Image (cartoon, rainbow over all chains, first blue to last red; front, top):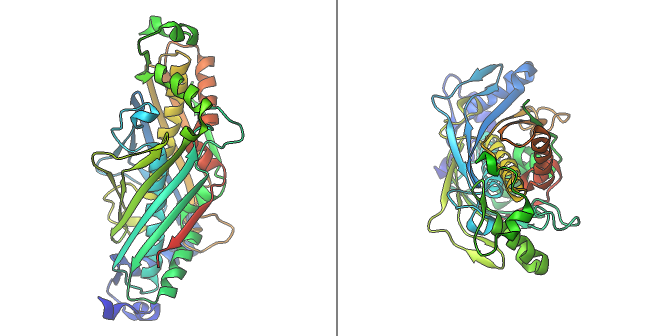
Length: 200
Length: 200
């Protein structure tokens, strides 16, 4: 793989008539979609959805199925079902990750995807990408014991380890681009309006 | 259950020597922990962690294991491993939910837990809690095609359906309290500092 690590965008574009993959990502489709969205902004609207069901105690199931994007609704063959729970110290039975841990799952997935996609678009081959994440919080906020303490994470720290034949400076640049492009990084870093209603 | 739906906090506190559960939540432990944290704020510091591994394309695995809280580190018997991917329209193979869908999993779990815990603390029995969530976005932000469009969700809408013998007004109040207490609601609604580094 390493001798292909510096395939330029130009070269990829020149390969007419066949689909080019870098890091398992179709750069051909990535470029085609970017062009398509540029010319028809209706294609850029997406809606992701979830359905929740409380089981018992802190055990909650969330199902992910249909989504809307690129002017159509997509139905999966069957939903992805995610259990959530709390550990005993937070009054649950620890059957699955808790919601704060799921935030780290979302952030990790999004930053890594942004990193990989942008590497692919630039023709940079990656061999390994690993990460560690931590979120620090003080539960006095959520327990209603302090007005000075926020409910959520005070901070989140993410550390990447990337193995690639590309220069270190290039990888550092990709880490910057990942933060500039990642939707979940944006959702956590900046206020996102949430409307919660009760069905009559 | 319904004849027990208005057990007051006072009554729960009077039941000395045995553990009282409401909605599968130990109200006894909830009250004891609240007292303990009030008297020793070192107990309120928590750190949740995740480890990420890029597999191929948009397929990423995130593992959840150890966490720190109440002055100790907890090790699970084995990690919870979550796959993430993107659907084909977003250049993946749709093996699992994508990061933006995981945000909805986190938010749903957290709001529902906050609702259930606060109901339990007030002695309100819940029969069913279901929810639907949607997150709306314009992918031009993440694709780098527009500076006016943000990368993440423009808005998130959550709708709860709650079955309980408690008065509707009480349930509405619980929905409000859930938003005031939920850590993930706070993380999404307000800016959370994220530090991303590359290991040397």
